[in-house]
Length: 286
Image 1 (tube, rainbow, N blue to C red):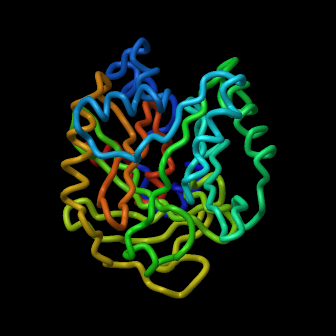
Image 2: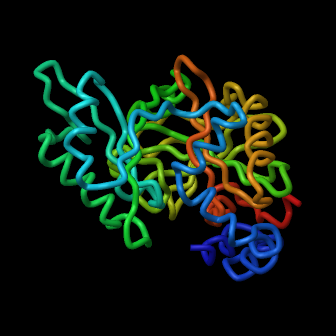
């Protein structure tokens, strides 16, 4: 994908996977600490310890024998998110909402209790992670700030901020599309929107092939749109970076309608597509 960058911009300052690993990850992140970011349950424990806002945890299911009893205790909720603790790229994540008839819906389709329990079984069995087994994390569902509805009113968008030695280098807004099943991940057909770090405004939209000034599902321009809580999010990213013994991170944040900015995930090997989204290499940001 980075080859496309050479067609649109002077490639000076663009880093590839090898350079990212050799110059950014290996010198700054000790492998023994990777699990603190790779495991979402461990990461949330650190966030809680340092008083960093994040989604409320409803349940952590470690064994298949716990699934039915744990799921039965969650029936009072009307919205929740199921995710693998060690998953990546949005794999295995289910956003569930309960209808008036008491049935659960995910991506517009009904899921029975048996299907949900089977999905949790798949998570624990390691289907969505590179580990032989995993843990299922169930947490509250974020209600996006109204700001995002002005761009696209589906799914849960998030911001990715790259930090090095606690300093934010580059950021993008990741938005779901009608083709991404409610997910904002770029490789699952979401789109990235560049961010001007100094002003906290949006720039161009990148869909993996083309640039534009609007979301692919509508004509609403995003260029110059002011991001709410921007400088609060920068400070939150710094505080999160300080909490982890890892110096090069991709920090994902969401903005809840009621609670404001919250940390969603911490990534020890953040992808490089953010350079394409911003038409700028990470080396320049240094």
